[in-house]
Image (cartoon, rainbow, N blue to C red; front, side):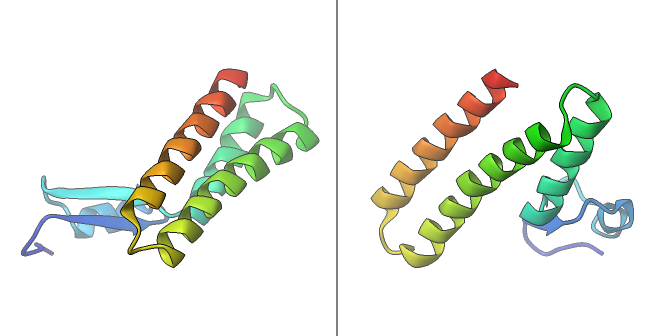
Length: 100
């Protein structure tokens, strides 16, 4: 399928979806739920953390991203507030990444 305009496809990373929308102008992004699941799998696969530690990391990422989602949904007409929240979430994600 060819899209008439550049697009971002949000999905669960199924290869068939990428193939169906194969186009150099199309970007793909994993949806939040599958992103959390992928993170959990990657942390498990790395075998460096126990279940409790993995769950804490995933929950911290969920809190960051879902709080951003809520600000975007409920304050769509306030770009400054959204920008501030984005900066806070980026800082939180950088902190989480450095701890990992």
